[in-house]
Image 1: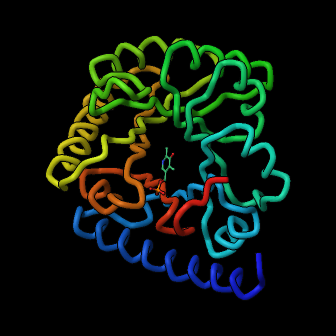
Image 2 (image 1 turned 30 degrees about the vertical axis):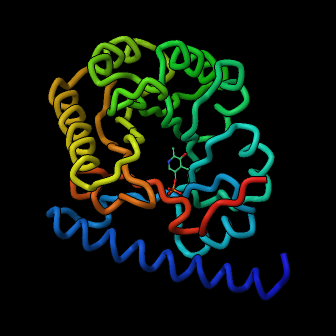
Length: 241
Ligand SMILES: *Cc1c(COP(=O)(O)O)cnc(C)c1O
């Protein structure tokens, strides 16, 4: 990229990150929580490593990638010493082997089958993988994830696996044309999260509720999210090649 454009992009990231932190602090305050308890993930799909590293230098300590191949091709250029990486996109069984050694969490566990494969590959690598179960909170036909009615049973079953540890839930709610609707989805997620947490299932740690993206993260925080996944509000609109 031309140098002046790149410089402008760095300034934009700076400015965007400041705004996001302010909004997070305000939403935390309003919902009676500490902003430190809310993790801001930078979603880095389609973003060049130089910009990701810039965000890391500015204090981002968590990134999320959707695709195994894209992450593997970028990871050697990223400053991941002080930054964790999570997989947040659908994982195919045959790709689990490749990603397991390189991420600290897989947020997009959407079937028992993939949980089993992650456990198997984690065991081979002599590690325990932290995972979130992805919930299809809008019960959309087109979408992956567990239906809300299936999540509890899935927790019991996955908790038996040797080399994964359930750390919470993740969701991408349906695209909503009004705030009241998306608020309902977020609040339903929160209820599900708390219900499962209260059951105190062995090997299930309901610590992380991952919900909220660029357009709705303050709302998600108000409803109890403690991990927001921010792409375009930080890096600008994505350009797909
Ligand atoms: C792309 C993506 C995001 C970020 O989306 P923005 O609207 O750009 O913030 C968050 N979560 C998941 C799972 C994504 O795929």
